[in-house]
Image (cartoon, rainbow over all chains, first blue to last red; front, side, top):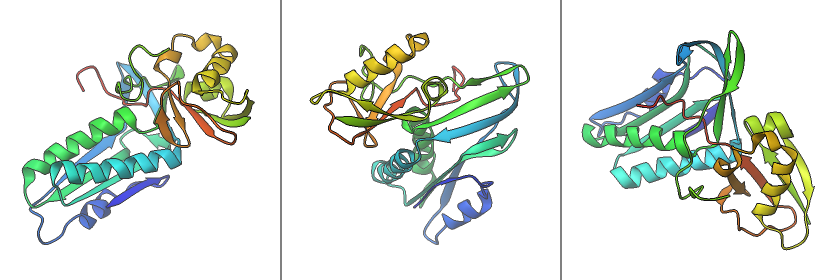
Length: 148
Length: 85
C-alpha cells in the first residue's frame, strides 16, 4: 500500500508498476491532471496545500477502507503539493486486484471520497486573479448541514 | 488554557497560518470558531461549512478542548469537480 504526499513530479509508470503482482488481473488507475480552465476562465497554474499529517492519515485510512470494502488487493494514492502546471498529475490513484470489476469501483470511490474529506486545498491562479477552488460541502458526518 | 489554531485555505489568507488562543477552561470547539468568526467577519457565510479537526481528527462544534490541543479550521476541501463530476 503506497500512500504519499510529494512535491516532486509523480512517476505514474513507477506507481502503477509497483501495484502489479502475479495474481492481479487488473490495475485501475485514476490520473488527476491540471485542467487549463475553470468554467472558461483560463488557468495559469495551481498551487496545492495540505494539512499534511492529517491528510496522510486520512489517505491511509481510505486506502485500508477500500481494500476492506471492495476486496481489492492493493491501493496506491499519491498526491502532489506545491505549484503544478497545466497537464501535470496532481493525484494518482491505483487499485490492483485479481478481477477488474472491483478495481473500477474502488478507484472511483477513492477519488470521490478523497475529494470530499481529505484536507487538501488548491488555489487557482488565473490571468486575472487567484481564487481558492470551491469545495463540495463536507459529508454530513463531518459537518452537519444545520451546524452553526 | 491555550490551544494552537491552524488555518487553511482562505482562512489562512485572512487569519494567518497559525496562532495561539487563550480560552477559559472547559471551552469547546464552538468557542474557538466564535473567536475566529469575530476576527474574520468577511467570511461569515463560510463558517457554517467549515470543518474542525482537533489533534487531526474531525470533531463536532460541541467537542471539549484541553490545554495544548491542536485545532484546525478547514474550509471545504478542493474537489475541483464540475457540477456533473
